[in-house]
Image 1 (cartoon, rainbow, N blue to C red):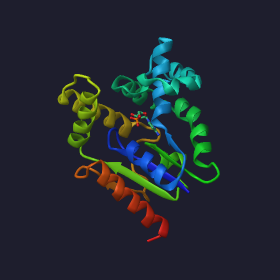
Image 2 (image 1 turned 180 degrees about the vertical axis):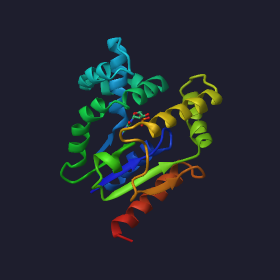
Image 3 (image 1 turned 135 degrees about the horizontal axis):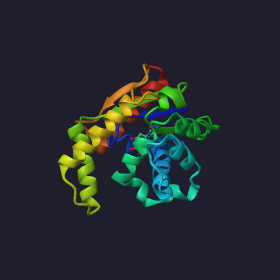
Image 4 (image 1 turned 60 degrees about the vertical axis):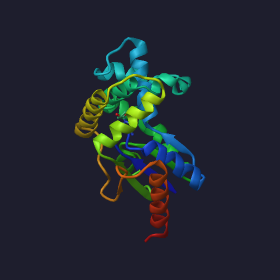
Amino acid sequence: MIIAVDGPTASGKGTIAKALAAHFGLPHLDTGLLYRAVGWQVFLDGGNPDDGGDALAACGFPDGLLADPELRTERVGGLASRVSIHNGVRQALFERQRSFATQEGGAVLDGRDIGTVIAPDAEVKLFITASTQARAERRWAEMRGRGQDVSLEDIVADLEARDRRDRSRAIAPLAPAPDAQVIDTTALDRDQAIRFTIEAVETAIRGE
Ligand code: DC
């Protein structure tokens, strides 16, 4: 069984995907991390993330880079969003994601284009969303918890810029698959969102 979990930045899709993987005993791939590794590698190479050639060259990043805590920062999230617009980058990362999705026994993948491009054949497709304000507040609390001093306004501006770029890019833009179930977590806390989503998946599996 393939479970595709898509959605915008800070929608809670990563947390939900991890919880689904644990609940259903499936391996999980955070595909955003691959784009983050490319974005960070471009920076380490002294390249330009908006240049398709520089971004493509960075797709050969060493696997060890995926464990670099720097990848989780907002700065690298922005670089990832910029390198992700290049067709060459998306193609270079396709096979790795596709073979993870189609492994024996199934998998959970989260990202932007899992239900539309990577696994249009997924048995379950979810699109997790939440208002910009709710997403910004969650991200703000998370960053404050890590001791980072950032303003809510800056986070709202950053989320809006990334949403705009992810939604408007020509290739594989962020959008729910026509057969995806859209789940809005604005009014839900973490545990409620996880419980609600597990129930949604169980219902989908039963074919109701
Ligand atoms: O999910 P995330 O914030 O870690 O993703 C970082 C960026 O990577 C996101 O802004 C767009 C890009 N991305 C993508 O284009 N396709 C995916 N499947 C996952 C992420």
